[in-house]
Amino acid sequence: MEEFLILRMIKMKKNSKKGIEFVFDLFEATRHQKFRQVILPKELVSYASRLYALYEQNPALVVPEGELIPEIKPSSQDAVFSFSGGKDSLAAFLLHKDKFEPNIICTYIQGVSPKYPEEFSRAKQIATTLDIKLSVLKLEVDNKTWLPESVIKNQLIYAMILDNRQTLPKAIGFGGTKAVGPQSMAFYHDSPSAFELFHSFAQVGWGQHELLEFVEDEIESYRIIDAKRPDLFNLLTSCMCAADEKSVIRKNIQGKFRVILENEYDCGQCYKCAEKAMISKKFFHRTYSEEYIRFCEEVLIDKVNSPYHMNGIPKDYLAKLDIKIR
Ligand SMILES: [Zn+2]
Image 1 (cartoon, rainbow, N blue to C red):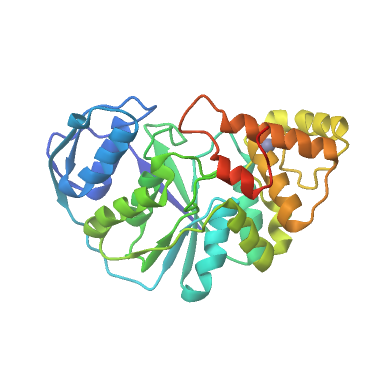
Image 2: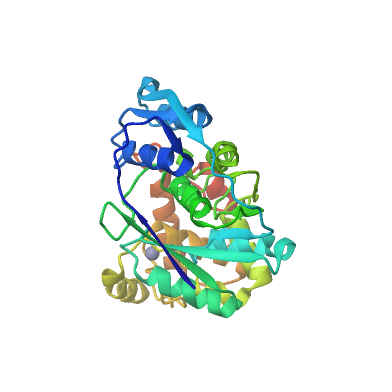
């Protein structure tokens, strides 16, 4: 099943708009982290003000003069999961699906990750293994075939899913974690509290629905998957390495550290692959050479000291993986 949503930038002078139009304005105003003034309805102001404050922007850029025109749709029993094929969205799906079966819709948003073309094929492979239908929402923004970077990308996806459905879902679920780890990042817009604030806006814009609870942390995501569907473990990756460079990097890492990387999607070198190896070793009895473990520890320790304050790993998260900062 494939659905298409084409978004085009339309400059509208009026201040009374539907939810998706305001969210798209906010998306435009925060693209590439170059914040611009944006007129929003009162329901979105607290979300946007916190976002602007976090990125050290002048809160006066948020102008609360907009009027939201709610878009009321017939309600349904559906639970919609944003399904990227990554571990957190898979864990959220496995955690909540029993409550809603058979009224489940898993939606892959095509156009979010142009640098990782294999993500879509992996999401399809996981969906096939789980015997679920994957609904595809294809985004085209500003005549490009991918979704450009913006600090509200996740909330735009949330709004697009609601906007694009014929009926109002009973619940909506996203991959994400309550605690900040290396993969969930410390970005506010990725955090459960950002989704909760946006949820209160979405309830007014589209109607009452439940925002499904996030998993505790990345370790918990892997635990849920390992407990419920261990056969999917080797399809999962959060690797940040570009597809065309991966095979060379993998070969180098495997040779240098005498290690076999079971999962063909892992480069073995980036901090996400390093974290996965450390979690797999501590919690799932995977074995790696000592040299490789030392390498992974160094990769993660470097990340604690990341100069970019919002992108570091908290020290207590490393302690959970038995990594001591020397
Ligand atoms: Zn990697």
